[in-house]
Length: 361
Image 1: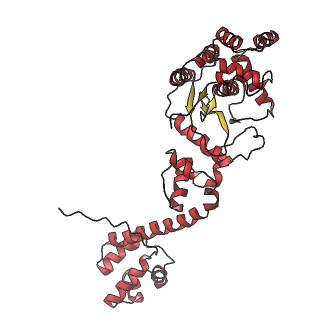
Image 2: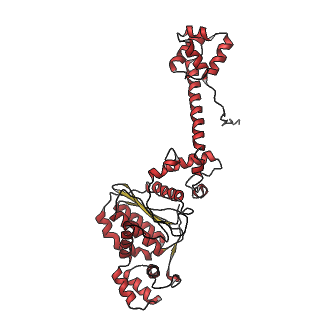
Image 3: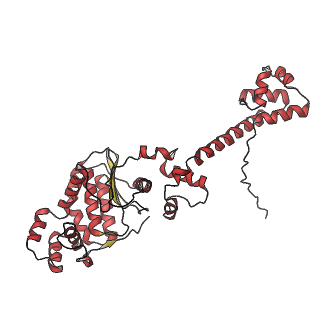
C-alpha cells in the first residue's frame, strides 16, 4: 500500500503574482505595452502589478485569461496565496514582538496542567497564549481582566500567573450550567454550607457545586500557578451568573472554608462590576475586604459563640471537638480561627486541622 507523504513545508519567501505574469510574458514574447493594449489597461497598471506594488484583481484575472489563455482561477489563486502568505509573515513578526510579554506567563506549568499545548516553538507558545486568553494581543489582557486583590505580605506576586489562573476559572465556569442568580435561595443555604466541612472532599465539591449552580453561581476549582499564592476569587460573568473560584493546592480546611464564605460575601455585598482575588496571608486594605472577612467569620463561627467559648478558658482537644460538634463544623476550622485570633500558638492543635489537596484539573 502506498502512503501519500504530506508536505507541510512553508516557504520563507513570498512571490507576488506579478513575478509569474512577467515570466509568462517573457515566455511568449509579449511586451507589457502589447498586453496593456490587449486588455485595455494603462501600461502603468501592468507595470505596477509586475513590480508588486498593485494587487491582481478578479477583473484583471479575467482579462489575462482572455489575453493569455491562462484561466482566471490560476491568477486568482496566485493572488490569494500571496496575500495569505503575506498576512502570515506579518502576523509572525507581530507575534515575535510579544515574546517579552509571553515570557512572563508560566507556560510550562500551564502546559503541564493541560491548559495549553506543550511546545518548544516560541511562535506556537504565543499563539497558544492568545487562544487561551481569547485575545489578539497579550498587551490587552489587563484591560479585559481587571483585578482587585490584596497585596501579599513579603512575597512577589506574579500578576501574569494570576491572569492565567483567573482565565482558566472562566473557561471552566462556562461548562457549569447554572440557574439565574437567586439571592434569597443563597442566603437560605449559608448555614447549611458550613456543615459540609465534616464531609469528605468529594462530597463537599459535589454538593457545593450543585447547590451553588441552583443559586446562579458556578463553583470551580483551579490548580494554583507559581507566585500566585491565590486562595480564591469571585466575579460576575453576567448579571445572573457569577463565578466562585477556589484553589485547593494544599490548603487547610479552615482556610478553604474561610475563603469560600469570603468570596460569597463579595458576591452578596459588593458591586457586580468588580473582580475580587484573595491571596494567602494578606492584609485587609479596603472596606470591601473587611466586610467580606466579617461576613465569612460570622457565618462560619458566630462571634458571640466564639467569645463565649474563649471566655471559658478551657481550650483543649475535647473542648474544641465539643464546640465543633455544637456548630456542626470540622474542629480544624475552630483551631484555625483561634490561631488567627492569637488565642493559641500556630503550632497548637494542628493535628485537628484537615488539609485539602487539588485532585481535578
